[in-house]
Length: 228
Image (cartoon, rainbow, N blue to C red):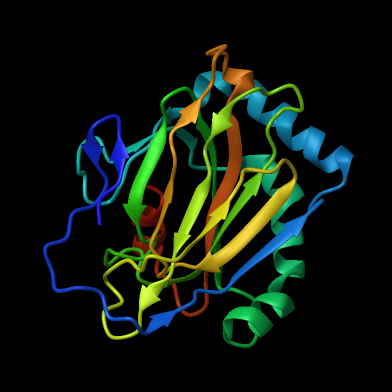
């Protein structure tokens, strides 16, 4: 199976045909996640951080695989998002079967995807530093005036006997303002290219994306996770 981003292959497979037994991957999507005051405060903080964003990275350093802009430390913005994430844990346990208790670590970063930005097919736990991630989340909070298109999150189902391959079935999640989506970190997914006609920072696709861990986390792992 292959997808195209301006002639760049997102994935190629020469393996045997995918088995017909497919595991439908669960997801949890919540609309109106923050109240308007919280969301506007978060948006204001991001706009103030315009000059702090840096090019995104991936653990494998594969070129042309991801393009976006990130701030790895939420700072005071954590006060808007993290308590609401914690309030969702009972639902996460019901949907994904996560362990009892609160997460041992909530990673979170600010991401802006501007004109032409994308992230090709990947999982969120494919390296030694990230293999403790159990649940991923993406919260969308772009400006009400933002006129970008694209930037959809595609979550792929997996063949039961070949989880490293993609099934033909998938969930397309649009970047609806003030909504959040949770999914297992093992799920193959991608972000389709963003089109931002104005090219202005404030008109891009704004997200808080992150990952939840249950279990011990060392200081060294926390340091490595900041760039994963």
